[in-house]
Length: 76
Image (cartoon, rainbow, N blue to C red; front, side, top):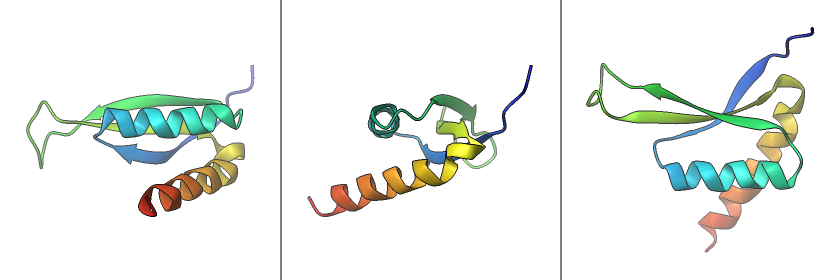
């Protein structure tokens, strides 16, 4: 079984923002997952940082989609 390399393409502590990015990637048929990491040294132990992860081969396309989404949301 071939194991693919996963990379983080977007991080946020806002779950609704993560969900929007995830849905944009889903619409583009880019397989993605959301992972969360507890932040312990600079923030409260309950704070979490969410990461959207994609296969390394799809990283460039994912960044293009995320960049377009961010530019669109800035213009609103």
